[in-house]
Length: 292
Image (cartoon, rainbow, N blue to C red):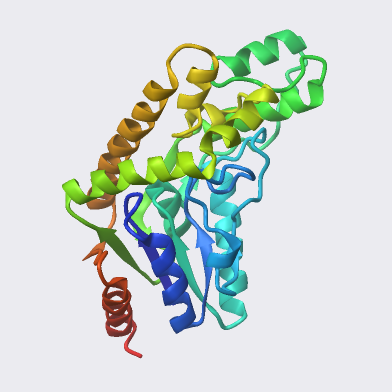
């Protein structure tokens, strides 16, 4: 069986995924577009090793921040993991709030990928790098033509449209969404950002800044892009923290909009006082659907 656990930040997705995985003999696949990157830990609220409780986790910490990783790459990797896990008699749990990643993995979406990689022989290294930087900052040195060409091909391929074919599910799966009231959610988000600061978010981001890393992952990731503005002396630290909170709240709203319009989600209200009740409710729903 395949179970998807999704919803906005701060509702308990990670904890539920681990507890449910123990009960249904499952392995977990990441469905968060930022948690595929090594080192992006605090702002993404990535699961810590001690929190995994022996459950096998896939597609976490698999790419360097400087690497391009597209939704097409994720689709291929996720489907390989599904096949592998199911072939070993285990069940699958997807966990994360990146709705498009979930849909790309589990629905009949097709990418228009170029059949052949272009060499861009007619263009200089400087011209190739300029084309890349129209889309995103380019961390590759101008003399490294091989990497520049590979990156531009990746960008052009990933820019191709994601085609939907009959909205058909490729797998039998259920989707559980954790939710709470807007007031509680926004307070949880604000508290989480404060906790991230206590855990060392500023230092984590500074490590990448000092390496002059300005990849797409860094400059689009909430918690990272705001601190880069602070390190660039464009805003104060207090303004950066406030922007992280505001952008996180806005992202949560976009997540709800996508999930409610694009997916068939069974919503469960998170019981913060007694999270065991949330786990039990999710487990009962999975048992009901799969009849075991």
